[in-house]
Length: 294
Image (cartoon, rainbow, N blue to C red; front, top):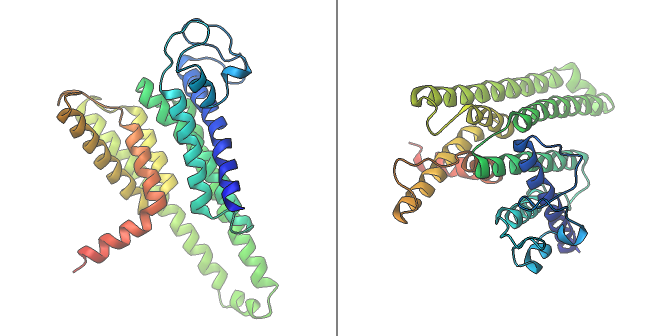
């Protein structure tokens, strides 16, 4: 039965992926996201329902517009499949189908929204070399607000459980809840400071390179990743982003698709690093510290 849930999540992701690709295009072009029908970018003909079925419409039309026969960009099916896989990954790693725990559902919802933000930023930087403020800033606000609400809810739930438990009352009097409060506030502050530090690191890179290869968007994206991953996984996320970007650049140079002087869209690799750190960060850090500890 669980496989059916994942299939449903993947199909839902396909449809959301089509919408997210539209958002990426319209944000950059300054068009309305909520109003205006989907149309061919070349002949401007409005698309109908049969043209908007994820993957299937692209396949049946053989990757071309049905009206003007212009070849369609590969980013259309790519964004749909990418979102479908992202949704399945979020469902799997949060274990949302294994339990109905409210906190797990909250994290599941948070990661789905973040997947949407990440995919839009991935596509805008990949296609236009741009990380738009209209996306990255709301994403920052969303993460901060969610963390504040979620941590507040966690503390309130813990307090009520202790208060309504015979033994918990003694723990309250002993200061156990205040210790929890201190630990959570400490974690929140450390995450914020590390996110600011990552943003300043990218600002320094932009400053010393005079904006060649990186820009203000990378500074904001670095700060966002710092918030999403939290310390120390956010440091790992940035490190992995640089590794992935370097490996891709070397591959392109070896294949003679690019030269040493060429630049690449760096945002997608930072986002990939963030996703890998979210999914496997604890295991990677545990392996690293165990392998290289004295």
